[in-house]
Length: 290
Ligand SMILES: [Fe+2]
Image 1: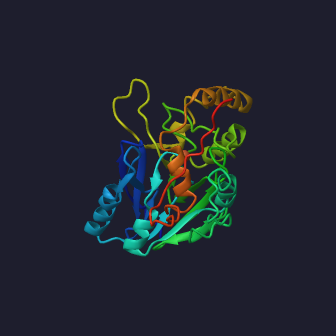
Image 2 (image 1 turned 90 degrees about the horizontal axis):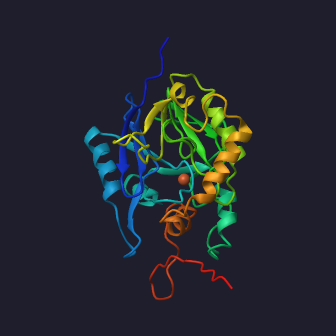
């Protein structure tokens, strides 16, 4: 009897957006995936570069990995994805949860983004809850974990699961649930689904912000530790969580890169089509109070 090998996981932290991207490899075949890669985008100048993506690709090259997949946990609202660049360089397929269709339909009118399909065809794979696919010889199980957005998924490989924006580190809490299509009660139920996994399961966060009293970034924990998460520990009921989450979200400001991120990420990381002058523009819908 053979047991599945554990994936080799290397984390890449992007401090400007507090995002963690991962290079995940099958030790047997050296096939690999990149989870939630970041595009380095400077909003003040409108300039972008691929330094973060190149760092991951270079690490993969040094190890002899072949990148088969770019896996997005959701349409991020705080950073732009570099999925198209990685696809161009490696031939990897770009996958996301199938409910990205709902997110596209929510935001298409917001940005008058008429090129956005609403059927998810900008992506190569739309994963369903419970779907299984492979990286080399490793099985990947998809968990639909809505709440932060309607389309969030987590990817489980052997004893490791990439939870996207559901949970943060146990000393920091949980993701916001106030974006369009988000819902605190739904988020609570998705988190409970993750916490039913075996206690030794390793959880990999998409973000870290350093909790009060912690002087270093961290992104790996376990189900056992997350059962004591500051937002969820014993005695916090579903209703308590919803009240806490909604009160907290009401005080949070919009992420700095919200508007550019959504426009790019619902297009699978592509910029909007160029205007007649050949230049690509991002839009800012402006509402002036009467
Ligand atoms: Fe997010």
